[in-house]
Image 1 (tube, rainbow, N blue to C red):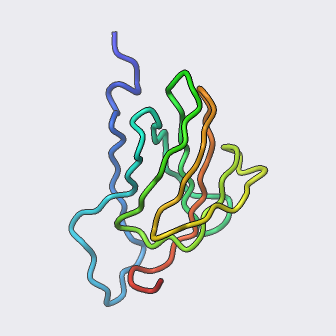
Image 2 (image 1 turned 90 degrees about the vertical axis):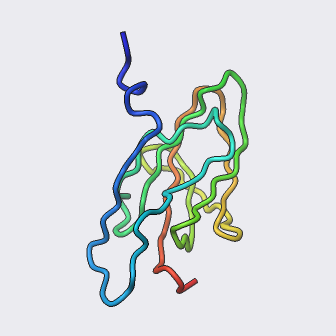
Length: 121
């Protein structure tokens, strides 16, 4: 028997811009790159805050984990870290397009990303 997660791992998605204007878009890209394999991207969805992207991250290990998350093809202006209901969010430093977060064993939290336009940061 296979569980739903096993048939959808790694999480694959297509991001389609609402409007591109005259900007050229890359044919392919990466949503994020997570440094530690025991941290899983569960879902990516719209944030309650208009225009932000919300990533649900889960620690699959039996111990606490700190990991870096890179956003190679997205211009992230700011990030907030909190529970999956977007409560208790705290600002997280974005350094060279990357953030560092910590998760307790089995914990799922959300990372809200304020995005800019490519080339405007």
